[in-house]
Image (tube, rainbow, N blue to C red; front, side):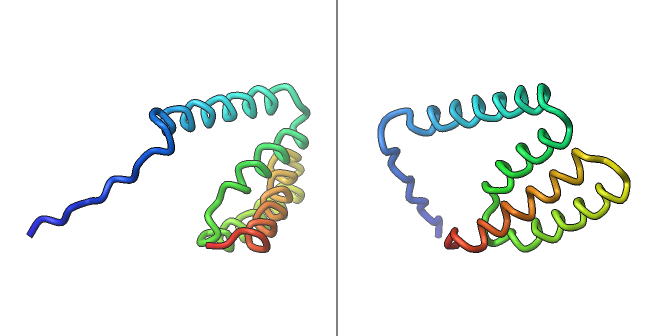
Length: 101
């Protein structure tokens, strides 16, 4: 028996295309900002914003990855990795605290 998939209606025609265009524009903006800022600031900004987009289901794993990145980044004197790890930890704490699964 073939299962019928129920297709969700768009909020308005072309809404998903608009959302995709906005997402791509924001990604390009963060790439441009990241390229023009010092390494530590760029790593923090990009990791923080991208960390906020993680599903709460995977937030604990990303939290551990952030701690690991921060420790290894500071030990290896890599500011972009170190501050990116700190930002990822902060972003995942926000996701775990305020976002419902």
